[in-house]
Image 1 (spheres, one colour):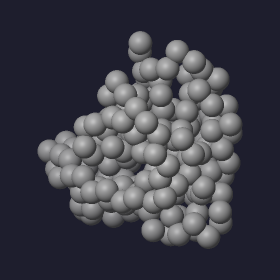
Image 2 (cartoon, helix red, strand yellow):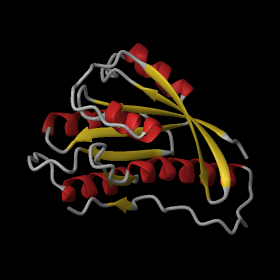
Image 3 (cartoon, one colour):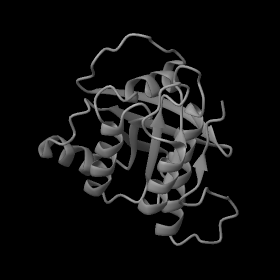
Length: 186
């Protein structure tokens, strides 16, 4: 079983990608917005008793540029598509990105779920994830809600895919089913 996974975190600019990653990797949150060009982070975790080493690509939010998107598609094992609950435009951008990626391991993430201002409801996120046949989670990097869980979900999906690809269907491990969701309760 592969122990290192490359996860590309993609979405519109300023939707919360970098905050999500920095909370996961460094357990910190910055109030100020600093636009990302492209950063890579490494973080290890133990999931179901087995180590997983993640290489996380923090993208600039300009993935509609076909050359950059092609590079992400060919190099990533999985995609975390992020939008902000406070931006309908970032939600629509996320939908567009999903149509560009064909990877099986995909997760739709609604960031900033702690915000009082919403343009996109939880129900809309759940409905979209059902249409796209992918898992869905609402997260808050600021309040550290579901941050670790979304990366565990990515590992679970990747390990499940490996198990199926290698014909080891008899595994006793349980992996989250597609279309599952992690909710943000405030």
